[in-house]
Amino acid sequence: MVGMRERKKQRTRRALIEAALRLFAEKGYEETTLAEIAAEADVSTRTFFSYFASKEDVVFFDSNTRMERLLDRVTTRKSDEPLPALLLGIVRESVSQATEDEGLPLRDAPLRMHLIMNVPALQARALHLLFDSQLRLARALHDAYPDRLDAVEAAAAVGALTGAAKLAVMASIERGDPMERAMEAAVRAAEVALRGLDRLGDT
Image (tube, rainbow, N blue to C red; front, side, top):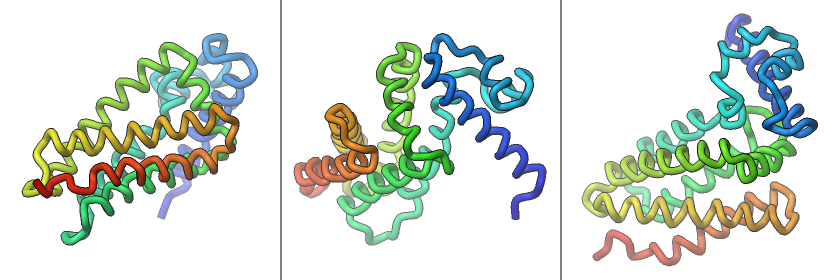
């Protein structure tokens, strides 16, 4: 059961995230200061640093949580779960996380995507996180199927799926689709990629 102190910390953290995204939308990412975010959330700048180290951290506020959940999906799989089913399950789990955003409204997801695609500092951070998460996921996949996948095959599977899903999301958003449709596009793209991976580990 979550105590009162923990609930207060969660409310403060969410207030900072919502304040930051609101200001980024109104003023722009570079133009928004940490002091302004703190003031908008009705806390001190010192309090801001108790939750986040930088503005970048606010944008990627859920990266660690998402990654841990995906890794857990791999490590807690059923022993007889087929590889394609697990891979598609990972993509579905990722999509599910994107529609939850720790309770943040889904309408803020396109804003985050826009920021990440257009702010150089965020582009660099996203690329770093992408490489790190793919490597961690590939290692976990290799450990889950040591007799079927070597390290290279596991990396290829993760790269193919994540690349297909992420590009499909961006293409969908670029043509003006709502976020829900973009998430559906991610799953569809993963299914297309999986058809090319069906025989992976059988040779």
